[in-house]
Image (cartoon, rainbow, N blue to C red):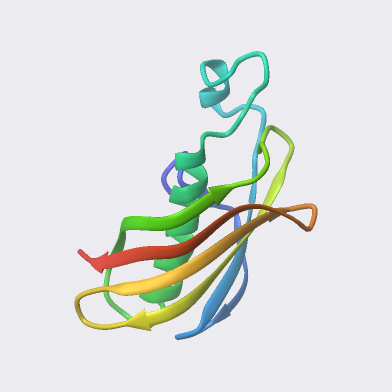
Length: 126
Protein backbone atom coordinates (compact mmCIF):
# COMPACT_ATOMS: atom_id res chain seq x y z
CA UNK A 1 0.00 0.00 0.00
CA UNK A 2 1.08 3.56 -0.65
CA UNK A 3 0.97 5.77 2.44
CA UNK A 4 -0.17 5.27 6.02
CA UNK A 5 -2.24 2.42 7.39
CA UNK A 6 -5.63 4.11 7.03
CA UNK A 7 -4.85 6.77 4.43
CA UNK A 8 -3.59 4.72 1.55
CA UNK A 9 -4.31 3.16 -1.79
CA UNK A 10 -3.39 -0.25 -3.13
CA UNK A 11 -2.50 0.26 -6.77
CA UNK A 12 -2.03 3.07 -9.26
CA UNK A 13 -4.07 2.32 -12.39
CA UNK A 14 -3.13 5.33 -14.46
CA UNK A 15 -0.91 8.36 -14.07
CA UNK A 16 -0.74 11.12 -16.64
CA UNK A 17 1.99 13.47 -15.33
CA UNK A 18 0.79 17.01 -14.76
CA UNK A 19 -2.83 16.06 -15.49
CA UNK A 20 -4.53 13.18 -13.68
CA UNK A 21 -4.24 9.89 -11.83
CA UNK A 22 -6.47 6.91 -11.03
CA UNK A 23 -5.91 4.38 -8.26
CA UNK A 24 -7.78 1.69 -6.40
CA UNK A 25 -8.16 0.98 -2.73
CA UNK A 26 -9.64 -2.20 -1.36
CA UNK A 27 -11.53 -1.80 1.92
CA UNK A 28 -10.85 -4.92 4.00
CA UNK A 29 -13.08 -5.93 6.88
CA UNK A 30 -9.95 -6.12 9.04
CA UNK A 31 -9.55 -2.34 9.34
CA UNK A 32 -9.71 -1.74 13.09
CA UNK A 33 -11.69 1.47 12.53
CA UNK A 34 -14.72 -0.73 11.89
CA UNK A 35 -14.64 -1.83 15.55
CA UNK A 36 -15.82 1.61 16.67
CA UNK A 37 -17.20 3.53 13.69
CA UNK A 38 -20.87 2.58 13.39
CA UNK A 39 -20.34 -1.02 14.59
CA UNK A 40 -23.86 -2.07 13.55
CA UNK A 41 -23.27 -0.80 10.02
CA UNK A 42 -19.53 -0.85 9.42
CA UNK A 43 -18.79 2.39 7.59
CA UNK A 44 -15.53 3.88 6.41
CA UNK A 45 -15.24 7.41 7.82
CA UNK A 46 -15.43 10.19 5.26
CA UNK A 47 -12.18 11.69 6.52
CA UNK A 48 -10.38 8.47 5.54
CA UNK A 49 -11.87 8.64 2.06
CA UNK A 50 -10.73 12.26 1.82
CA UNK A 51 -7.27 11.25 3.05
CA UNK A 52 -7.06 8.55 0.40
CA UNK A 53 -7.94 11.12 -2.28
CA UNK A 54 -5.10 13.24 -0.86
CA UNK A 55 -2.65 10.33 -1.15
CA UNK A 56 -3.50 9.83 -4.83
CA UNK A 57 -3.15 13.60 -5.41
CA UNK A 58 0.21 13.49 -3.60
CA UNK A 59 1.44 10.65 -5.84
CA UNK A 60 0.42 12.63 -8.95
CA UNK A 61 2.17 15.82 -7.80
CA UNK A 62 5.30 14.11 -6.51
CA UNK A 63 5.79 12.35 -9.83
CA UNK A 64 7.11 15.71 -11.08
CA UNK A 65 9.20 16.28 -7.93
CA UNK A 66 8.76 17.83 -4.52
CA UNK A 67 6.91 16.63 -1.45
CA UNK A 68 3.25 17.61 -1.03
CA UNK A 69 0.56 17.26 1.63
CA UNK A 70 -3.19 17.74 1.76
CA UNK A 71 -4.00 21.13 3.29
CA UNK A 72 -7.76 21.27 2.80
CA UNK A 73 -10.78 20.53 0.71
CA UNK A 74 -13.92 22.24 -0.45
CA UNK A 75 -17.27 21.39 -1.95
CA UNK A 76 -17.02 17.79 -0.74
CA UNK A 77 -20.06 15.57 -1.03
CA UNK A 78 -20.65 12.06 0.28
CA UNK A 79 -23.42 10.21 -1.58
CA UNK A 80 -23.21 6.62 -0.41
CA UNK A 81 -21.81 4.50 2.45
CA UNK A 82 -18.47 2.76 1.95
CA UNK A 83 -17.87 -0.42 3.88
CA UNK A 84 -15.90 -3.66 4.12
CA UNK A 85 -15.46 -5.44 0.80
CA UNK A 86 -15.85 -2.29 -1.31
CA UNK A 87 -13.22 -1.35 -3.85
CA UNK A 88 -12.72 2.38 -4.27
CA UNK A 89 -11.67 3.81 -7.62
CA UNK A 90 -10.12 7.19 -6.91
CA UNK A 91 -9.63 9.72 -9.74
CA UNK A 92 -7.85 13.05 -9.29
CA UNK A 93 -7.43 15.84 -11.82
CA UNK A 94 -4.98 18.71 -11.52
CA UNK A 95 -6.72 22.06 -12.00
CA UNK A 96 -3.85 24.46 -11.20
CA UNK A 97 -0.38 24.36 -9.72
CA UNK A 98 2.09 26.95 -8.48
CA UNK A 99 5.10 26.83 -6.15
CA UNK A 100 2.81 27.61 -3.19
CA UNK A 101 -0.13 25.25 -3.84
CA UNK A 102 -1.85 22.85 -6.17
CA UNK A 103 -5.61 22.62 -6.63
CA UNK A 104 -7.15 19.33 -7.75
CA UNK A 105 -10.59 17.80 -8.04
CA UNK A 106 -11.34 14.21 -7.10
CA UNK A 107 -14.00 11.53 -7.39
CA UNK A 108 -14.39 8.17 -5.72
CA UNK A 109 -16.54 5.44 -7.23
CA UNK A 110 -17.58 1.99 -6.04
CA UNK A 111 -18.89 -0.38 -8.73
CA UNK A 112 -19.11 2.57 -11.13
CA UNK A 113 -21.31 4.62 -8.76
CA UNK A 114 -20.10 7.97 -7.47
CA UNK A 115 -19.74 7.83 -3.68
CA UNK A 116 -17.65 10.92 -2.96
CA UNK A 117 -16.68 14.05 -4.86
CA UNK A 118 -14.33 16.86 -3.89
CA UNK A 119 -14.48 19.80 -6.24
CA UNK A 120 -11.39 21.22 -4.54
CA UNK A 121 -8.43 19.51 -2.92
CA UNK A 122 -5.76 21.98 -1.81
CA UNK A 123 -2.24 20.58 -1.64
CA UNK A 124 0.81 22.47 -0.35
CA UNK A 125 4.51 21.65 -0.42
CA UNK A 126 6.02 20.30 2.79
